[in-house]
Image (cartoon, rainbow over all chains, first blue to last red; front, top):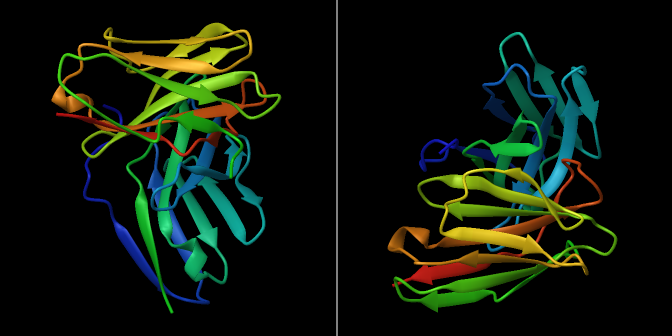
Length: 111
Length: 112
């Protein structure tokens, strides 16, 4: 399969701190990169996307950065809250319409 | 609540059996996507339908098939089930052919 491994990396942050979740992608030809959040027992939830011709895009409390030189994508969450605790997935449209998801990162917010 | 509904929520069946999973997209969404989420493979794209027609295909096994009906709801049929088919199956929908997809709550399939 496209995703690799089930030993998901975990990021633990203190409530109120900023969080940075990183993702490496593989296909230079991908047009879109997307971040999804999946809370326990729920389906993934769209957070933000970025086109390949952009370097940065901001949403509400979230910023996505794209570094095409090193094929790296990051999601920054400002003032992290307990409700941000979830698994975060990056995804790319590696093959046209098809989204390929990364393995995910667990974000744990400590109160 | 994403507006996408999936039934059933849980399904337990035996190897060799056939099951049908159902998905109703958000009102107005024309595209439906099916994904499989398992512990060893992560979240895998299976297939996409757009306004009744197959639009894109991913890692979908030949034992699996899907369709989208005129009212835009979709069904995923899984046959000759194997233990390894145990997973969460998600349906997602989008307004057209975009990457802003809205996921349903999933169907947890357990094959015994």
